[in-house]
Amino acid sequence: MTQDFKIGPLNHVGVAVPNIQEAMDTYRTLYGATDITEPFDMPAQGVKVCFVNLPNSQIELIEPLNEDSPIHNFIQKNPRGGQHHVCFEVEDINVAVAEMNARGATVLGEPRIGAHGTMIVFVHPKNSNGVLVELMETPKDGHH
Image 1 (cartoon, helix red, strand yellow):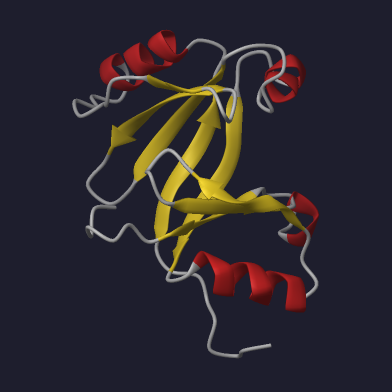
Image 2: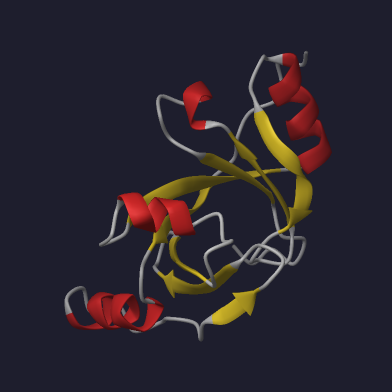
């Protein structure tokens, strides 16, 4: 176990939504967000995603693509949607996974490419006061 390991900046807050277009409209009309990316499908993860870009972070809007989506059950339990996860940057995803395992956390699955095109992994909510935590390798181009 390495005492040096720690999470980096908050990258985004993931919000599961039943309808991504309606959610985008809400962030535009209610909160005045003007920089929202076009939604795109991530079939490997079973979701449609877009980002609401803010001065200091992002909100990731996530809609299930189908009933097999990992977000589908969340929406079934929370029909209007809600906060799904928080994402923190880490320098090296493999070091992060090794440290999480060494520190007794339950890492969900293997590292995989996330919506930012960089490696991600999730840590079970039971390890983080009921919050699903995504660890994301800091994008190499410096874009957060």
